[in-house]
Amino acid sequence: MEKLTKQVQFWLCASIILLSLIGCDRLIGNSGNVVERVSDGDTLVVRDTNGQNVTVRFACVDAPEVAHSNREKQSRRSSDRNQFTWGVRAQERVRELVRQGGDRVNLNITDSDRYGRRVAEVRLRDGTLVQEVLVQEGLAKVYRPYLNKCPSRNLVQQAEAEARQQRLGVWGDSRFVNPWEYRSFNKIAK
Image (cartoon, rainbow, N blue to C red; front, side):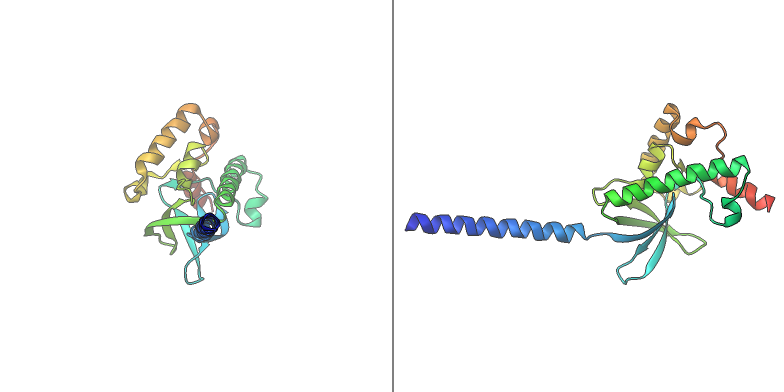
């Protein structure tokens, strides 16, 4: 009888521990901000703790532009098509990373920009820095004008040096125009 009681106690304790771990996993799994939309290769919209949508611009990097207007989508200029092709690739990669992270991200907000967006380092639940992945794969470039506000500047600079050396992504495209130069040129052209 005493042996049976000890077995029941053992299995009861094991069940409680197992159920606790499952519950903890669910709680931990729900941490972070829910991603509502991936706007482009360096911008997300997340739901904050108050249920409000907040636009988040990635700190440290600048990704190629995506076409927003019908005019841009129908452009026949090779510079536009090139920029938008890379922009869509970056956007799709961010979507893929967000899906892998369970549609949640953790933000380290470093600033806000002139458009009212939060500027943040964006990490997946496993700690992966989204900006580092994009730069590593040649789908974004380090944005040096604001690098002093980037806590992970060394990581992204190292990732960019490796991508450049291996000619990955935009580094292997001799026709690619840096996003900040592309935007500047198009402001003048309009």
